[in-house]
Image (cartoon, rainbow, N blue to C red):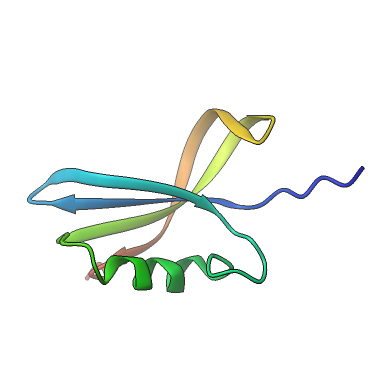
Amino acid sequence: MTHVINKLYELTMFRDGDTIGTFMFSTTHGTDTSDPIAFCERFLVGVDSDLAELCEIIPAVLLDGEIVESHFAHLLATWPPLQ
């Protein structure tokens, strides 16, 4: 049996300092999520947020593909870009 472990990402959107939405997804080759930054840029076009952050989730434990524990996340990108 072959196990494919996709990278997990979380896009968090903020407006006026409040979280207005969180979207978790994994990369899948050959789909629109295969490039997570480009995917988020397209996704954010229709979202009224003044800040968005994309993090790669580093799970500690996966159980049947679900995150049981997550110890930290690595910030990949922000919109608008951090100065």
